[in-house]
Length: 299
Image 1 (cartoon, helix red, strand yellow):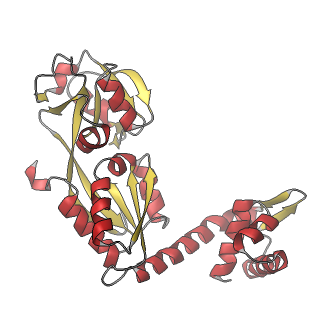
Image 2 (tube, rainbow, N blue to C red):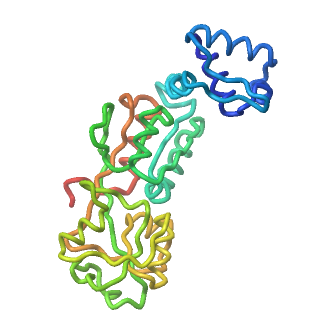
């Protein structure tokens, strides 16, 4: 079996049609069918069931699909790495990140990258959770992942600093004139929670820290995105938590930002399946210098 045959197979699955797949691949339908039959012969059985209105995967095809996807993505990643190697003056670099990082401190880094390496195109992949991010980087969707330090990662992990998690309240809040607040002082307040809230030790972050402070947070609203939660908090719906870069940068200065005493710091790392080289290594260096993250020993 060949990589081209795998690519043809994936296109047929994606299009659910030999006709549409042939058009997408710019090949004739007989040529496509020939390659799929050759692949099925090499595998030892039918991968696709021809239906009156399209195709569907056979049990063997469903088992084969994720491995074909990984092989094709790994080959694409290898091509990108080869083109972007050396002096990082060509090719394409795929970067994956959780949403808070993508909307927080990555825009400044991407702008500086474009100015320094205009011939290396960046492709950003965003994910709602750290688990989804790690899964996709492991599957080869991106060359680099940027986010919280992954657990039990089999590849390369490069710490790049720490980001502060802050509290957001409206301008007329009773704590608006302060810079810091103890979490226990917020025991009676409603909270705006976000579906992107990280899970720590099997428990959602806010439940964990509030439990340690002696209370259980009362949820007023549950949002899908961090930026929405910040807007809700700024309007007075409730207190919310967010990375400081999201509040001070992407969302704006229409609310009051409070640091927790003692401060909450979250380590951030760049992780990949193989050690960063060429363009990937240059991106990590740029992130360290201009990501606006504090050094781990400054907490």
